[in-house]
Length: 250
Image (cartoon, rainbow, N blue to C red; front, side, top):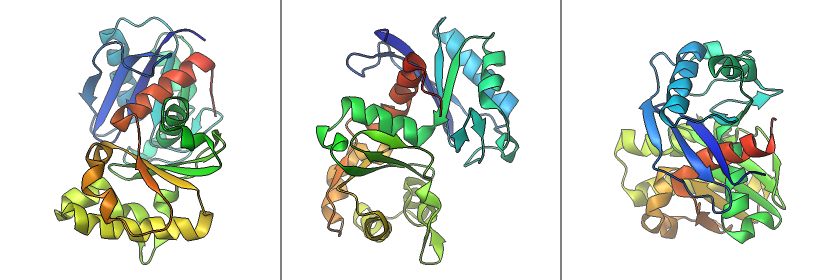
């Protein structure tokens, strides 16, 4: 495994990239972000990824995350990106956009979970753990002794009459202008539902809200411990870089 790799994290509002030190999980230079094209069609997003690669003058393999179920390098869903992604062979799409170089494409939350296993809290590699990213939606990664079960997408599970991510994502908090304690009450309901279904040993929560964990974790009401992601909002890029370096292709 090389010491340095390159990761791209595609989100509903922004596409971010960085060169990553694979011995530490840290960025070797500040990340660069470009707003996600509107509409976020495959060709438009592929063009933005090419622009990011060129910005860093990167010449090696590229790891790329998508807010999508990805199997055999093909997208099977489209969360907060254009519906035209469904059925697209994303590996071939990005390889062509990047001049034929090798790419590894995987679900964004799965990438973040891989990164946390490698560089985060050591408890993540002990037993069943659910990693969640709270952002525009709720992404998830199921981990058992540090091994990934990919493409779980439990943010779309019904909790009451709403999908979990409509009830407790970070974007829902912003949209409704909930205080952290008020939002934590709603998040607790979602996590209790996951707790009763899957019985994890630990919840690890990433996304931008993880930077302010002290403002909402103490207000959660459930039995399973909750810890913020160690890599905060950089885990997707780091996981994508690991996938590129190690040839991880779900």
